[in-house]
Length: 383
Image (cartoon, rainbow, N blue to C red; front, side, top):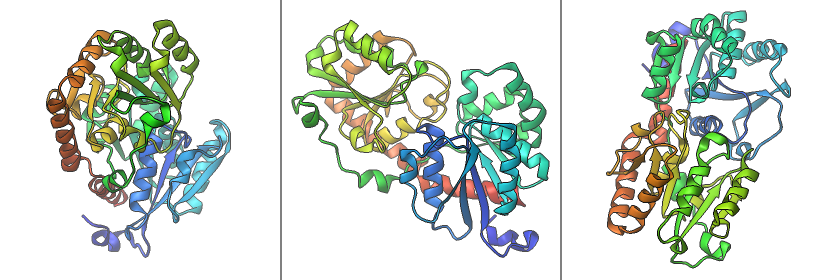
């Protein structure tokens, strides 16, 4: 059903106003997705997107990538407060929001509470992997008593996430699955970074790369241990794109393992696509089920890179092991080292996987197609 099909029912004289609600705009998968989604809708005549940031924790690099025409409203508090819910309700009212779509469970809870206060707008909540990291008992109870009841719809970005929502108590009838998407035009127009030259590495060196926040569950320590166990370590280099609380510990581990001279910690790079294009192989080594539809995997596949990823969360939904990438067990440096060696020693297989990965993206994860699915979800919720 298109927006003009319901205009009489809703008495609409303007575009459907959709608030995309996030806790912050820090660099992360959910935030990255919200920016891509809003960007893809800026010229859509049916939707007027509004990004609502609950916590005033400063501007981040991701904001600079937003096109003109996207309004960003930031909350008055540096952390979640009771007043955040009242403020959010006032935003819904003053901007005449038709649909509020929240991302990450804290934003879900606030949006549901604000929606319950106003009995409007339509509320859509999300599952994007953060519930897999574990929460306090009161948070789970609050969701069962409030979020799952108030939300009109729940949108998971993987079938795994949909099943998790059902297990946590969300009514199955409310759950829909829409994966993340990729803007292939942006990717194809991004130049390849002169990574080897900038790092002083030989041009023919084999580069494996990871794009991830340096948190404990991202498995970067597993990558370093796998790298230390390679049979031909001098022919391979490792690039880590990202930053986080584990950086100092990981740098120390690299020195302890004797691989520090062959590992580059590049820190946070936004955007990171030009670096990814310089990889020979991309790695997603997450050890927990928090990866439901990782943007880093989708973007690497879009860049025609074979991806080695762990069998956690929804990641196996993206990769058919041996066809368009390799799936390995989590927390297994030996399996990761074997996979790296396998792809380094077989150029034909690696290139074939990379091309198959790109075709999979083109068939299932185009941002324009994904955005249209979100539009249809919002229209149905607004009816």
